[in-house]
Every structure is written in structure tokens, then in C-alpha cells.
Length: 59
Image (cartoon, rainbow, N blue to C red; front, side, top):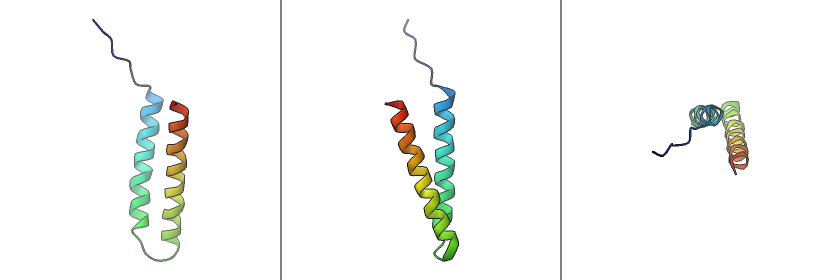
């Protein structure tokens, strides 16, 4: 019988958090005016940085 490796709860939580931030950033980025657009872009950058960090940590 072969055992399947378990996924680390930390990785799953990180992926879930990144997915939630992505949804939030897309909803804020849909605004075309003023500070909301800038905040959305900042969140997009943060999500990309977080995704890169997760990718680097898993490799």
C-alpha cells in the first residue's frame, strides 16, 4: 500500500491567503479613479511578491 504525502497546512493557508488577496485586489483594481486604483495596484504587487516568496520557499 502506498501512502500519499500530506500537504502542509502552512502551504495550504498561504495559498488560500494569496487567493483571497487576489480576489480583493481584482475588485479594487476594477475602480478606475483615484486612490482606490492605486491601492489595488499596491495589493497586486504584494500578491505577486507573496506568490514569488512561496514559489522560492517550495523550491
